[in-house]
Image (cartoon, rainbow, N blue to C red):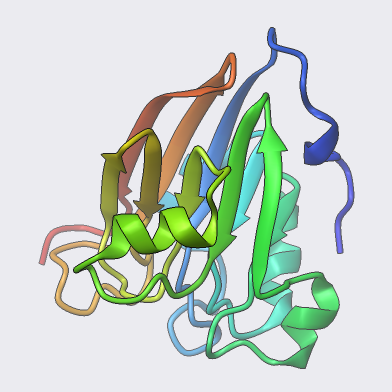
Length: 182
């Protein structure tokens, strides 16, 4: 496990962070090594958040070659991913922004209220599981799912997320396509 940056210690409001958000990489079935477009997007990020279903810990080692990684357990993750440091949920602070992560946020219907109950102090909740990109803010809490870079299912393209965090706020949130159109 790479330790590098202690993201819980980042609190100075002059800090600007570029955070890559991934989920559902499903290695080695869909991710045998970091796809070139994903690698291109990861160059220069300060932190990688992985919202689960990594499936094998070598993928986390590979991602840690780009930036420190924080990860939560997905329903397909085994003991090696847990041993790497993944927990069922994660709550941390990034430049004063309260961030929570969970793999499965449940169905889309009722999601904002459910996430607010589960993580009442979080400004941003990152999740995965559905493979469907999602970016919605309700009552001051943003819910963000980057989709999957490798297992797009019914989505037109594989995707990741990029967040810019400044002064305790998400100043930019993008879903970035990392596979060519079908």
